[in-house]
Length: 307
Image 1 (cartoon, rainbow, N blue to C red):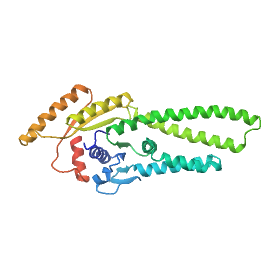
Image 2 (cartoon, rainbow, N blue to C red; image 1 turned 135 degrees about the horizontal axis):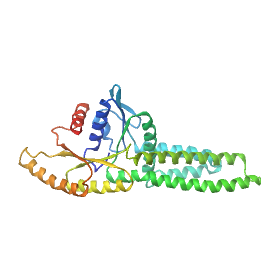
Image 3 (tube, helix red, strand yellow; image 1 turned 90 degrees about the vertical axis):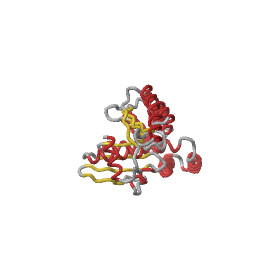
Image 4 (cartoon, rainbow, N blue to C red; image 1 turned 120 degrees about the vertical axis):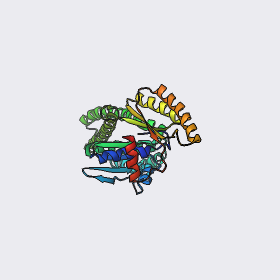
């Protein structure tokens, strides 16, 4: 689930997740948005570890907010430990310097978040009936969803290079030029890369499985969110991700005074553009509510409107 910032993605994601839990399903909602709105919405602390949000026996709802800083630190720590174990001891300082510089490198946070998302989806699809991803604003979402393909191709390239290196190493070993420790190191490198490729492949397979996964775009009935929705939908379709619906949130009423009636008419013109550009994508309108959507009762009411 995604869309432009501030349109109510987290509210809609949580309302859908809660409704499914109330229907008896085991549900996990995962927020990749660094704004951390999930905890504010549920009026409780929701951190980087999975937390129970609602018990609806036999169903339940768990939630997690991916912390970019913590995720990046954990990712680099794991990489550091692996490299220090696999590289010659005298290169340890070089490994540390490289990873310290990499911490703030472009794309590092996104790569680390993707690793975490891939892990949560892999474990989530085994332990839950439904995983709801509440993604960051549109541009970040499109980049994040394109990364499994990019990272998978990069890892495949590394493995091909490992294949060539292994063949050369085997020849060298026959000539007595390669020790057992080096062979073990190379085997472990291959194992690490293979696990990474499998994790990305699983995420890519889930995201592009039209029977198992669909993307919902949440938007406001305004010019920029509509244009961004059209662009995001086309980018996702190009990536093989099915866009199953549009949720127009906070739709102004036509019968609550002159100002809101005028806004309703302006919104209708923007939605007409949306229907012209995306005629085959189902659309649901959610009315502007009198109060903020905060807490369980408000989420239940929103879920009823979405049903």
